[in-house]
Length: 182
Image (cartoon, rainbow, N blue to C red; front, side, top):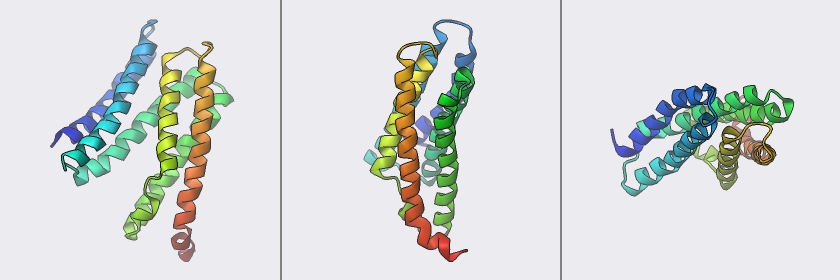
């Protein structure tokens, strides 16, 4: 167990706390939930940075880091789908969730074939993740009627578009291997 892995585990431990904070009936609960999400987002960057810097990458960390990221994002999106209760937010949220499922399965399948590097994270994926985190932070912090909530939704749509773009890139890279198995 090392510090990067502890940070990753902390991100998973934040998830139930995020849910509890989200549902508390106090005016301060939404900004605190958003702050917790921001902290989790920072630990996502920090654990990878420290693992590389201190040469502490482990198979456990390599497995758990993307799981923690996806769990945190999917839980936040599910909470926001309920809060907004509208197609305007549900559509990009489901695009993002669906893409995560498809790409996770694709990466697992490609890894079994020894071709995991063909579906490595690209700059589009990193930009998508950044926009996704910014939009979720805004949307978690503000009530749906707030004037800046629309900004959060617009950024979520930008993240969803990049999500589809990156998924298409990954599927194109994997297509020669996928089409052989048809």
